[in-house]
Image 1 (spheres, rainbow, N blue to C red):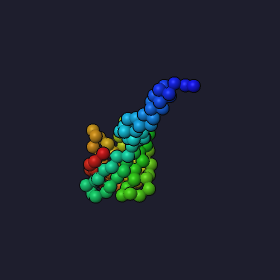
Image 2: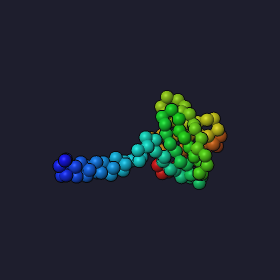
Image 3: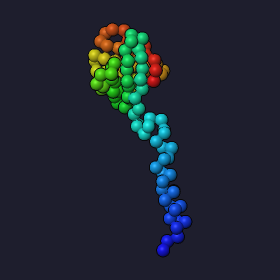
Image 4: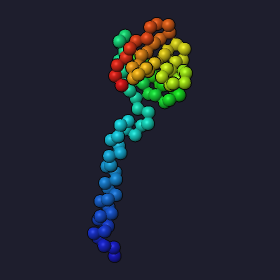
Length: 105
């Protein structure tokens, strides 16, 4: 017969692994967390950056993918919509209209 104390300690040790701090990390285990922004023109953006592209949901609609333009990975555009990040500041533009500054993140 096994020692009951050893069995009890093993059970308690295994039970604590289910409640580790790993689940509380930034991004909730998601390597590409969503950042929310509000632009000066009233547009709400939910942005997920993947490096080679950005996934952007505009005003709660289905997200669209914008490929990275250039080598720095700070401008994402599909020709109609453009997301730009310069020194931590995000702006959003549609077509040839002047881009709107956005805050949040």
